[in-house]
Every structure is written in C-alpha cells, then in structure tokens.
Image (cartoon, each protein chain N blue to C red):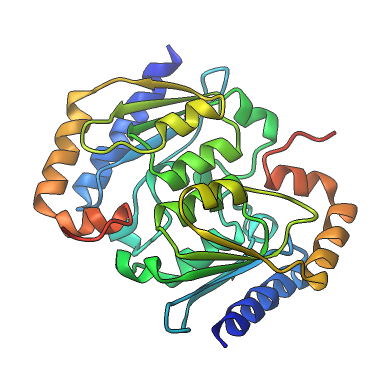
Length: 151
Length: 151
C-alpha cells in the first residue's frame, strides 16, 4: 500500500531529524503509482536553514518534476504543514496531504481543503511523541521554526 | 529610502538570474530599519531546484532570524509571489510585500492581504520585460516553475 511507504518514510525522516538533534518533522512525496519521489526532514538546526522544513526538503530532494506528476502525488508529513509548506503543496497542486498528527500544531489544513487538496490526519502517536519532546526541550527553537515569538 | 535598496537588490538578482539563463525573478528581504537581511534569485534551472524561488532563496540566504525580525520586514520581489512564496511570507508574518509587477503572473496577493500583510505593486517595466522575454523563450520551463501543465 503506497500510504504505508510514504508515511513510513516520513516518520523515518522525522526520527532521523530527532537523532540529529533537529526539529523532528519528516516528509515524503509519493507519486500516483506509489513511488517515492523525494523525502526529507526539517534542517533548521542542522543547516541553519529558514526554509528547509520537511515538506520543502522532500520537494527539493524530488528535484524538477513535470506539473502532472505533482497532480497525482501525495505529500506525507509527520506534522500539520505550516503556511509555507501548505503553499508549496497548493502551488504544485498535489492531490493529497497525509498528516501524521495535528495535536501539537495546526497549520494550513483548512486552506489546503479550500484549494481542493484532500487532507487526511492519522493522529499517529509516535509523531506526537517526537514533537512533544522537542517542544518541551527546545521551545525557543520550535517557536522560531514556525515564525512565532516566544511567549 | 529603504524601498530603493530592497527593490534595487531584487531587480539586480532578477537580472543575475537572467544572465545565468535562469528564471529571471529576484527577491530581497529588508528589515524594519532598512537593512538587507537576505537576497536571492530563482534557481530552478541553475540548481535543478524545485523550491528555490526568489523569495525562498532570499529567506534562506537571510538565515535563521527571530520571529520579531520578520514581523517588521519587507519582502521585495520582482514578480507577484506564487502560492509557496506567499505562504512563506505568511508563515513568517512579514509586514509588507513589494511586488515588481503582476502583469505576467498573479500569485497570492489577495491571500497576503487576507492574512494582514500589506501589498504594494510597482508595475516596473524592467521586471515585466525580463519575464516576457523568458516566458516567450522558455514557456515549458516557466510552466514547470509555477506548477502549471503545458498548454
């Protein structure tokens, strides 16, 4: 089942990010016929990157693709996508976004739906655990990652 | 005047992209007190990048910044921002987006306003010329850059 491949890859990327001491969010772009097109994880802390969120990293690692390929594709991400990553999915008109969890953060899910993209939320416990641990240990880094001022 | 600095830098980046044979769009992020925080240009053709649009490149080159810095900042871009770059400006809550032209392409201007970001369109002739030339010479590359299927 392609959803298994995509979600497992996204979760493995999140774990890799966690192991590297980074923001533990992973993503994987899967084609209409179930092939992994690209995958990646948040690189804010590892590369001092302000834009390599997991979904952007997955799109970047997938390289240049024809518009038609995105249109049948599914973006798997371990966390509800921020406005930037939402916009990337909207721009490339992916068919579906599958989200690991949206308890620790809610991003642009409504806007994705509004723009005709199917949204599925898995409420996966492992995704939530990774985020809860990171947010609790590094609240300032987490706020920076989503453009929020420290409370 | 800070708007001169930012727009000039964005236009110089677009020209640089054009000289490199790339998509001729440039951007520059300027702080509330008029300092250039980062600038860049579209790197699709030069780096086979699916995500380094001009605004993303400018944000990336600016590096990690506190949320408060973005909130006072202006993003100068030579072309109306696509949904991804719109989302990036929304996520970081920049104060203002100054757009070189929106004749050759209209992106997420309405959504920027809806999310509380000031939008200014300059209708600069040089920006339009660069885009018209590129779209006319390389229509497929342009469609790919904005996630559109070839007509």
